[in-house]
Length: 297
Length: 281
Image (cartoon, rainbow over all chains, first blue to last red):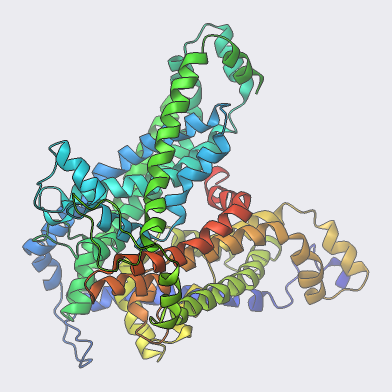
């Protein structure tokens, strides 16, 4: 009976409905992921199309390649340096605009503008500000943080840090919105109750707000970590990995090896290492937060 | 609400003022670079560079913006960006809707596995796939064509999740009633379900358009001169000339204005698109 169709799970053309995803998943996710794994075991040359199997040699070589190790180190510094600061800053902004203050709508929108803008645009803007004589370079020089005769991106000491500062500036607004959405779901009477019990502002934050936004904090840390490990655009536009590799990152290394030196097998091995690092850290982070959640309740 | 109101009156007044001042200073910090970008883009001193003595370029005019279209090929880049973003957005509206609908309403073998593939992909760092994707695009003969910038991005997994969540919230009576009235599967999908999904599809559309308009890495490795998009052109512009900041910033403004306008009109949609995956999931 047609009438019963829905109850039993109507199936006319279900395959057709799913087809766009099956096609995309197979061709643009699964196949590249598998192909990449295979490539990493070969010395595929994109110019000739020729390749030989080299086994796990690329992986062994990566860990004695100073360029890769430096890129990995820079990437880790970038992630460890930016993620906690961005998270704290974003939470601070969210707590601020969540208060009933005049113009808070304007603040919220304004903080979001850097995130809204293309990374390339922001990166170019900071190239200008960080250049010798640019506003931020002048400011940093006055504070004694920069060499007066060299732009911030041209000094090994300040280049990576400058990119990190920019990244925090850009992404805080984005994570602020995520925190804000969670804060707005915290029931207001909890605060009223806490106030009745004589809780201070700090105690309200520590014992009411923070436990209730643990879930979103995990999400923020997780996606920011995944995103930050893949930093490329900023590096490409601002420093090209320089000076002397001081800002080279793993994805930038993959790009250089694959598209400039045409060593796509080796580059794929580098990409795969990054893939596993990200996977591992995501799992660890999820466990870590999950553990605390269970201990609390 | 009441809790917050009551403490603005009492002891929290001074802290609030200090916080407000802090937030205001941060606002200036966030906006000032963009104001600066617009200011420089209006200057005709093409080879002005910032230096200790020269704080501000001179020679104000809007002609840099005209140059982008007459002297420089930015009209073409702008068109490419717009065309690709619109096409990808359109494709996502239709495809994410169909797939999301199937996950919400249909039963089929391996449904859990299939949905897991959607969630798993959300966790895959896409940038590690640049090399196999580049090879694939070349094998398909799509290098430097619109297809390379549209087809791989036509079904956003997050869109599928959003639509599935939204459709699951509706009572099935809608479809039962329509079917009793003799409506076929296509009529039900496009005539009944799709219109009521308009809010979630709007969220999806704006999100996809925004991300696509700003995207750099994939357009950068998939294209050459022919279908180069604005962000790629901006990054390249810096590469092969002594930096002509006024024109570069005029082009950067051109790339920025559409997303700012989009945000001003659809702020709610953008925010709910960003938070949809987070708060409920």
